[in-house]
Image 1: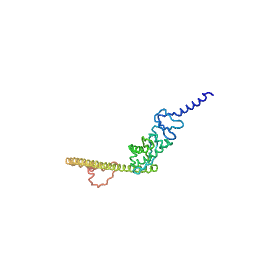
Image 2 (image 1 turned 90 degrees about the vertical axis):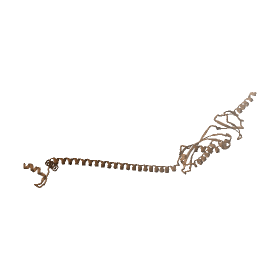
Image 3 (image 1 turned 180 degrees about the vertical axis):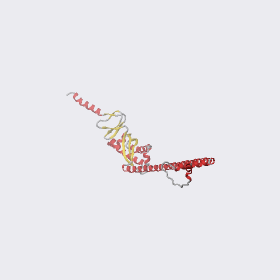
Length: 289
């Protein structure tokens, strides 16, 4: 058996050992080199790195900014009006050694669970010091900043850095929705009733003003009509007086004709008078002629 027969397995073993001692650190990751479970080195720069085969192992963690959904969280603000809040947070692994010591083999899953508990507690504590109006307002960036700052210290113990915390949605609990809707409906009905009452009051004022204006206009028109009628009657009487003074007999004849016209209308007219009545004096004169 020649030497090449012995060298080939040795070369294969050397090459396999060399390859198993090389690992690649991705630019999106951080790596820990563990020896019997103990951290011996940290690889944060991307590229090739080395480890001892069979003795050391490599554990990688995501170096990017991660996100976690928190909620729904039921909070009780200072005005005792319960709310249900949905939030999310963004974080990154800042210290991989401390992160490994805090979560062990659980990795990012266990870290997310513990961070969820931290954010839930801090959200309840911060939102419990303000009113529901402040939480529901559009200007709530200060509240989110307070929650983030309060969570930073506790998250640092896990080797995490909390980058941001946002409140996604804020709603009433289902059991409170109907009562809230009823209260809102009652408030709107009360406002509508007040508006109708004010409208009716304004309408009555306008109607009373219009009625008074009508009465005043009619009274003024009647007054002017009476004045005009009186002036006409005075002028007529003056004309009659002048006519009577000029020719009394003609004036009597004219008055008799007007009386005949008023008494003897068209159709059948029956009059019962004494034979010596003065009403038909001018008829008597015509008959006498």
